[in-house]
Image (cartoon, rainbow, N blue to C red):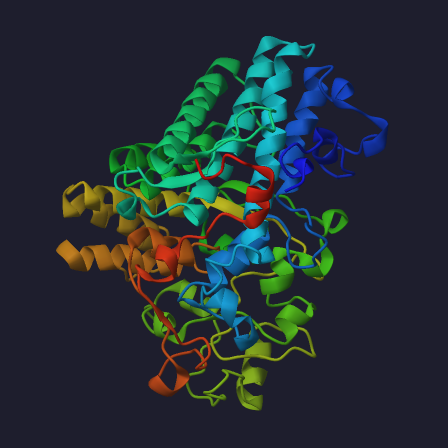
Length: 508
């Protein structure tokens, strides 16, 4: 692997032409590290660049678009609740690439997250020498640590075993690069990786508190974002006490959105968005953005030809009284092609009557989604990463595995579903394993399309099962697979060959 993969020049991230708080600055080739870190004001732009990197196009490919690709291709496509009529994508959708160390799908995740990590490390190594108040330096450090912790949390979910298969963290995971050095470094154990994630977040939280700094927008990291990363990481590690603790802290000050906001297209921050990526017309990735792949009103071919749909088996589990059921095209009373899902003329007309902003040349499918809508074409909008709804569900799961009283978990589910207004008829009465299944069901319903599906299934160690259309499901034969937890290298991606080319210590 070429050195620039891990020792990326910070100016690439920091001085990209951007709008809003992504400030327009001098051209990339006109500045250097000395200029970037001369003052804390300049260094803050470097942190801003970390956020920008989450919505960049990479590897000269139209598809790789930062965090949106992670959510869509790896979280949604590879799961069980998300259907798209792309049998030609079967290798990625069916998880047959985990042990292919030369495919770009293996390499992209490694490249993308280490790119952000490398830039965060440069910030951390140089910020102390910048001119400016110490509290500002502390806030910048805290933000860089939060980004780094998030990236390592994501990396170990791909290239590390699920915690339950790791011999209590003894299994090897990823390379911990914590400074600007580019030497050979062996892989750390999964426990060492989580220990570092915790350490970064502990330090970040302390610095947020002591600095008194505040972020200016949702795409920036702050203390609540650090809490949210902590909660998700602890859940992955099966550290349920910490998961519960930090999920509750993360959602403090972020009340659940009302129904009007819920049905407004998931392209703009609401009261419950804790962290997101910024997207506007002058910051568009055009046909390569997350919303260009999913927004029902997009004019991108990825939507017009193959709209994104909910698995009908999950759809049928959503109560009729739940507003989230209305976010999908219900074919009841109409006909459609049961082999592909394509809507009949009458069902398509019904869908257009509900959502007139669907493109006139778009193909409609039964169960297609209306949760995501672009603010501008082809796919402009913000992307949520953490919401307080997820934090409630993390609390519920963490309480369940700590054997907390069922009433406490029921109260959380009631808060999410009935008190919020999402389902005024919802009642929480289940206990035992039925309560656990209820938690999993509402994770699937609440977080559908946001990139959680595959990650949840791996973390839980449950079988992924897609039911074929001729068996009453949504999937064509090419995608109707069953993948057990022990299959496909236990759902763990092998380290890319490019890392071995660069890092002689990778096997140590």
